[in-house]
Length: 381
Ligand SMILES: Cc1cc2nc3c(=O)[nH]c(=O)nc-3n(C[C@H](O)[C@H](O)[C@H](O)COP(=O)(O)OP(=O)(O)OC[C@H]3O[C@@H](n4cnc5c(N)ncnc54)[C@H](O)[C@@H]3O)c2cc1C
Image (tube, rainbow, N blue to C red; front, side, top):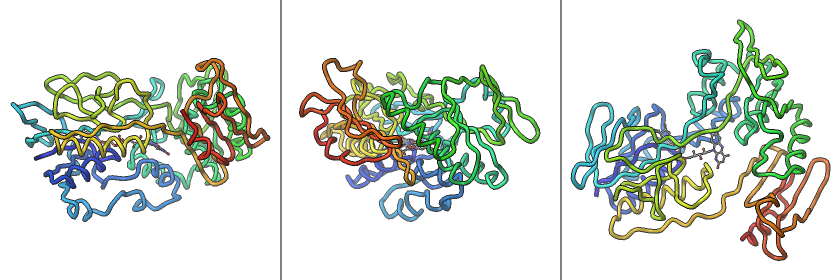
């Protein structure tokens, strides 16, 4: 059995390991020039808080030791079905496989106001190790930074920049932070915690344009202009499903897959951020990518004995030093009638609450402390 795995992030590496353990001949393609790395750690790498070697998942020899043929600098340009096999074209070379696992992840959204400035390295997403290295090469000479987008990645970027002694402004379009995952009280507590770290959070502010000046950038919203030497774009991401595949695979915001992570084309699987598992909520997360990669890898190597993927609850967590926030399930009443919010703790710098109906818990939000999180998680419906 010959399995081709496209993309060497969490999903790709875990798929490769499982397929190889099942005895398949495994080729893992990565468009990047560096060894596969832990993507969340690149924020620390950008601010010089870990060494770049600490971001790699495994040393180079690990792949060979585990019977994985790792092809770096190998962007896959096209996949075509040829009878019962698939041909994969990378760097002009054609490879033939019995099954495919696509693990191409997601890519950052570049907002319109930034699209014309991407050759200015002061305006950048923080998505790849290359981005992180570029930022880290500048960071010692910078005193002010703007983070556009107050999601989880934006907030960790802001916290690490503040720790580094930079003056940080987070500009968020929504009327409050992380509104999908936290109630109003939760969001307000998060904002207070950031304020204590001297992070300036501006909500309900839409960036309209950026004016690059020789020594700084002018970031212009409807009402205000902010000056910063560096601007990190953190406004979300979309599944990376844009390459030539024939026949067409059904896709919309990612490749559609069934409970076995198989697409509309038999023996063609997808896992991680690029996969859209029907009837489940989307959440781009390491744990989901790892578990989907594992199942897809097993299935790609055992086409006659497939294993079902069991989607579990995925929590949204950010812990950096004494700042921590956690959320899982539903935290808004509007979605679940007749449920009550039980407040476990409400202080200036902490807020813990569950949305419940007696013994059954529908959602948990915790800001400033994770006390009893695991206890309530076990009661989650
Ligand atoms: C800065 C940052 C911080 C994050 N922090 C957290 C966190 O704290 N917790 C959490 O759960 N999640 C976090 N995430 C999200 C998490 O990293 C992703 O959900 C996870 O990496 C998804 O894994 P994946 O394998 O699906 O995709 P990825 O890790 O994105 O890997 C996909 C790989 O495929 C490669 N690729 C794409 N197209 C091709 C092609 N045509 N040919 C060859 N290779 C290709 C890409 O270059 C990439 O290396 C963070 C993300 C970022 C960017």
